Length: 61
Image 1 (tube, one colour):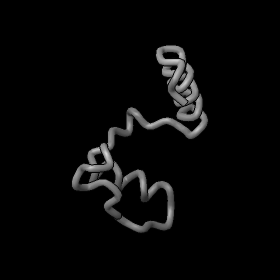
Image 2: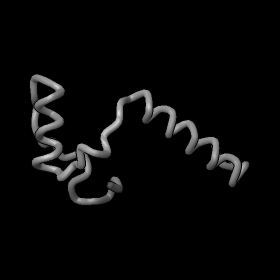
Image 3: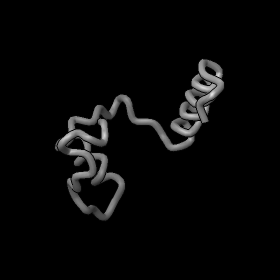
Image 4: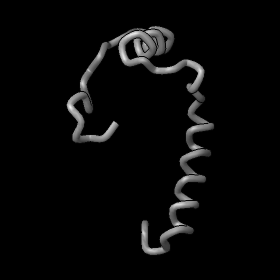
């Protein structure tokens, strides 16, 4: 979602557990549980993205 979209930063819920947050994400936002990954995997993918981006355009930070 891009920052200029209508729902950017909209608070959906304040919950006690991660399990509740995941359930709300699926119900209210249409998040696909089949695509969820743990933080470590996200970090690795983001690192790979940054490396690829830098290789394509050396002037990018």
